[in-house]
Length: 137
Image (cartoon, rainbow, N blue to C red; front, side, top):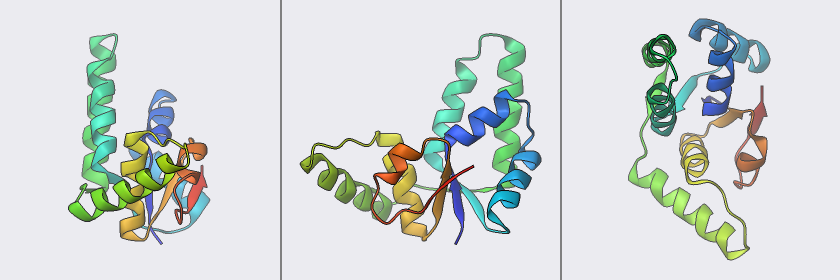
C-alpha cells in the first residue's frame, strides 16, 4: 500500500528546515519502503503558503521546497472518481452531523481511490473517512 502525504507533515517539516529527501527518508523509515505521493490539493495548500510568506527570503525558500517536492513525488489529480467518492463520504458524514474539511476530504478520497493510506499529523479529520488507513508520522 502506498501513502499520500498530507500537507500537515510537509508544512511542519519545511518549517523545521527539513529537505524533501529528508522528509521522504523519515516517512520510509516510519512506514517501510512504500510508494509516496501527493494529492493535487496539497499543491494548492503549499502554494497558498508560498504566497503568504512574510519575507521574500521565506517565499523563495518555500517556493524552492514546493519545486523540489514536485520533482520528487507523483502528484495525483482529483478525478471524477475521486470527486464521487468524496461526495459519498461527505454526504454520509453530513447526514450524521459530522463535517470533514473539504481539503482533507479530497486528499483522503484520493488515497482511497488509489488504495493508499494517508500520512498526517492531523489524524482526527482523516480517521473520520471510512476505510482509510491513517498513519501519524
